[in-house]
Image (cartoon, rainbow, N blue to C red; front, top):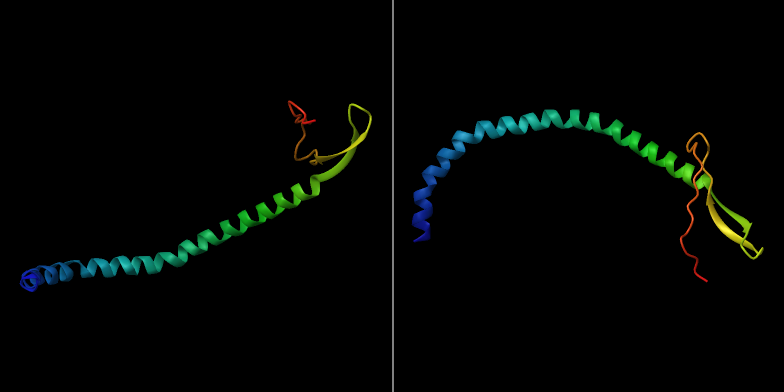
Length: 102
């Protein structure tokens, strides 16, 4: 029964395939021509983003320091400080905790 149904649809499928085959071939040809152009446009953007991220990481790693400062009792305490170059961060900001774990 299924074979008879498939044989009944066979002329319709052949007709649709012959009707849309030139359109599919044109779309594939267009993609083949556009793909190198897209790759040429996207590669410099990828290189630029990579360079920016590498420089940002280098700046952050260079600015990360460990410092010793006296606490409330006068004892020297190690702290982690991010000292950015004034050209990058011209405004001084302090981020202080609201409570201290004792």
